[in-house]
Amino acid sequence: SQTIHQWPATLVQPVGSPLSLECTVEGTSNPNLYWYRQAAGRGLQLLFYSIGIDQISSEVPQNLSASRPQDRQFILSSKKLLLSDSGFYLCAWSKGLGDEQYFGPGTRLTVT
Amino acid sequence: ELKVEQNPLFLSMQEGKNYTIYCNYSTTSDRLYWYRQDPGKSLESLFVLLSNGAVKQEGRLMASLDTKARLSTLHITAAVHDLSATYFCAVDIQGGSEKLVFGKGTKLTVNP
Figure (cartoon, chains in turn blue, green):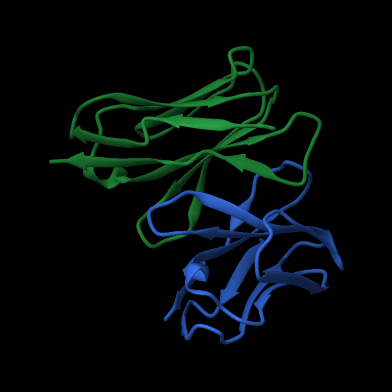
């Protein structure tokens, strides 16, 4: 069966510090991968999605970036965090285009 | 651009009552998903609706899809406190897309 992992689970970082969030998927190959952000009490905002290694699309211009160095690994990064980057970051995967997405446990980021 | 609208966004109901959450979308699609999110947690898949007229039921929840009306409903029967959560619908653009478009979510509170 497939599983999706995210770490860390929680993170508190000062403004201006770098960020690296990691997501890995097990039990499937060539998944589509997604990064979402959810502000407190709000809906989901799609940040990035990837259909393959080094194939990443950005949905929202911002100071975040994403990389996919391996087939089942998706990384969200920032060089300098802003207060507005605080939120709940969710990674998801799907088998194919427009298919059901399966979500990881999430990372709660607080920028102070 | 595909828009997905859920209503109501907030719903407070008594245990034992019935209610329906609506998900309207703005363009043709024949794949729709319902998710549940408990406070502070990730999204959990509830229903996958893949064709016009599809109906799925799980316990006190029943979801249906009318692709001609571009409408899905999530019906709650005899609500119980454990159903308190936020419910999201998500729609795939017909013809396949790397991504789903999510509604803003309906926060359901079931009061004893």
